[in-house]
Image (cartoon, rainbow, N blue to C red; front, top):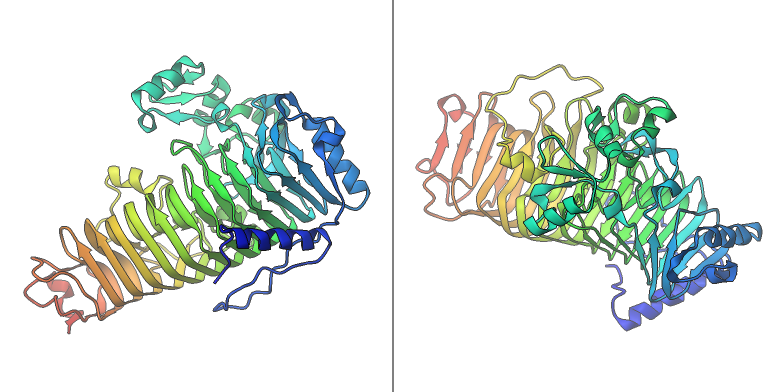
Length: 558
């Protein structure tokens, strides 16, 4: 079990560890026994010397632009081999900050770092976003190819995101919407979306794959829509030995934290906040990274909370770098489209992941796995245990290989269910796969649906074991186009409808399954491709099981 750094004793231990790190001692984060091989991840080695940004002319008055002071402080330390840039108490107003090798950005208590809303300070740079190589505005905090870097302390980093983001009318109150329209900007043709500028609207409507332009190829073409190319708050690409600890990140223009292609990353005891109306306001997107420890952190955001990615479609397959050796422990997600999420950009693969001791409260989905035809990539060797959930707006557990780019709530509002028998297409390198997933000790009080497995007819969701789960939901579990699924000691209590709905399921079994007695229909089996279904449940028998004739011989009730 990981240390909880919230009490004074553990705050002291955290401080002591930071002191050791500043003295160039690589102090490893304690790691629990894992079901896969993962090396111990050490804290970065940062030299003990430090300077204050105030020493280089920075003024924490909330008005004086400190961009030059940060750059000079980092350059001075870098010339001496690295060290800590200290941000004292105050409000520090600045443009982009670029970290270098062996540099730690450290915010003292009551330090508030606010990034300027002057978009001219954020030039277009080549980067990775939504799994694709593209151009976007430079991130407020960034590093590329850096080694031994850190962002630590007790302060708040604010991305001033409201200056960048579009907003949908149905995500605001009437009063908030009127205030937003009065503030300037432009509206969509249907009047239901507010854009901060005409350039943003042009980028959003001139052809985009979600938030990446599909037609622009030159820098000049991207410049024509630069307001649309919102930056990630913290962008760390191709970095090695990284620590993010203690700080609150909030109000990002887009995703909050985006470590991509990084090796040996520790994220501990951070808070990430975005308004619930923030488009693409993900908490952390870990992309094609190796050896990651994310612990003791809190997320309350406008999109996915904790998300694992590895590139999109051909670009991700050509890159071929999976996200692997990931530990997520003792984290809370209060709001967002998903608590813990894999995809949908997972074309390079995801493997060797442990998620444990987490709480999701008020998210659209609890555990969310999403992909679609055309992605390719394999998600496998996923281990999840000890997860508590409440007030989940849609599914407690979701595997969806028909993801269409919308949140689960938006898809549900549009009737996003699949038909009984879909036609398979040939399997090739563009076919995604979810397999070898082990889930145990799951509790959920309140969801629209207990579970939704939605595999492809040509590539089922495969080899999933759910063990010791208790889920209270409006409707039960719906398992579609899935193979070799085991529900062991699982209890599902639906308010209405069957506890289990199975469609085109093969080699499926329950062991010790429970649901309320007296359900008019406790089990429903449909589809023409069912095979070897064994349901062991005292509350389910031939009297309350609806099995279509073509499937009857494939089902055994014990």
